Image 1 (cartoon, rainbow, N blue to C red):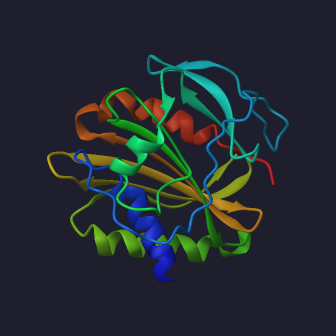
Image 2 (cartoon, rainbow, N blue to C red):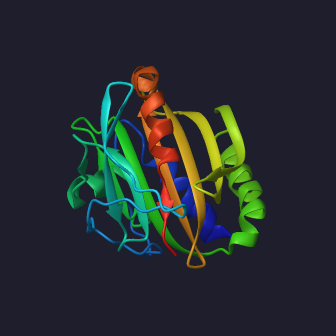
Length: 211
């Protein structure tokens, strides 16, 4: 429970405008730094394809050894190790982060070592919501529940949290992949939120998992 709470807290805490210096911790997250291929896959047999949403060009990518396909903005790049260590406060950082040039907009992917079966998604949703309400009591909430994406249940939390000199909109989803918790989060500063919400929704709805 404690390790799970730390993973969730770090996942959002890394979206702060001003990065903190990294602190020592024991790694609990499997790191996979290679993007594998560009063809999407779907439980329904549908392929992801390039699209334009809200003026943003989104292209299909396959990550974490082929387990996840999703659309990403064409001008986003994978955050390098040095920047990742600065932006996220300790070794419990996401598996992959794709970001724009200023790092104000991020898509973070975390294939954690936390065990979770599909039957436990409802219970984990309550646990995740409770964690965020505890650590961010002043957050503005837009959604909390279990949603269907491509025929699969995902936990979904959508909230705006305070940061050092702005607020951050966090749209996070999670599901079970091979018995482990997979988290995907779209984060954007409040100043850019309205320009990116349509694209954010398309990115989240594009998620395709291969067990």
